[in-house]
Image 1 (cartoon, rainbow, N blue to C red):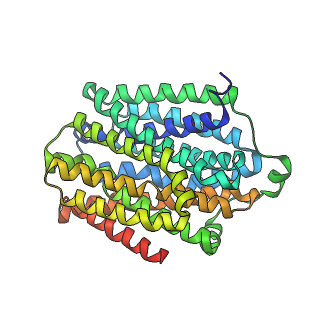
Image 2 (cartoon, rainbow, N blue to C red; image 1 turned 120 degrees about the vertical axis):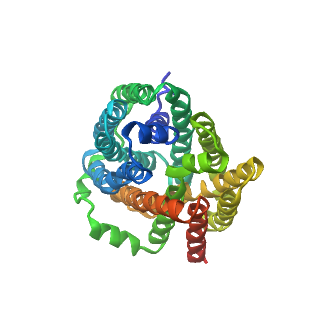
Length: 381
């Protein structure tokens, strides 16, 4: 029992449940669109509220966790997650959905705190593998979330969100009872400043950290160019409903979690961080192009598989680089900055992806993503 509720497992569980809520909406967005009688742009705007809130909350909560400890900030953010899921369940219009997504984004700062917690309990040699565990939790959450949305969404939008709220509440209780504090008092005393834009600019100027942050921004923007409208892509290109869409989201999450839980650590040991990124990015680019060009199920599955096989190395590797080169008293701050850079990509991505999807065709979000990752690859060389 003690091993089951170990700090690593609880951190995994925190991120896993948070991402259930993030993924649960994707297969049922069409239901919200019909229920609220709004167009795709307003639905994309509501989805964009999550990363907007994360952009500001990630570094602030991360810096506060440096100052006051990880545990109280995790409890605060998990309580916000419960509230957000209840908001999803009882939203009666697009404004309530927008507000619930915003609250979910604020509470989503627990991802950066969880990364800082993982940095506290792992050595530098184990750091990237530890970040892979968190990224694996993100991917598994993105398996379970769409499955819940796809299966129970057939009975309306309320039931999937209530299930997610129950999971989040159980997680909150487990953290309160079992999760110990990690930070030492002398480290906390050094961490006194909240992150502001000046600190983000400072981090970007640090050679290794700055490059990792830019790559993390690029890959998160690439995902968000197509993820919010992926169910619409499937509807228009392959004419499938919420159940099949949910299962395809789940398949992507399974591949992603396999990469991040089992391959990231081995890949870093075998190739090193930089060379691993140089291998992974081209694989992701090919996957994006094949998915955008797909007119058959076979090409679609191959494209999605390659996209996940390549792209899911990038997040944990870049986070591992940031954590390795951050000072001990700045772990929460630097992981918060990384979270904000990812959130910034996820802010612009849905709007740009939705616009080009509507104006230039269903393939364009994937082609844009391939170009963006190509630019990231050039930075590495």
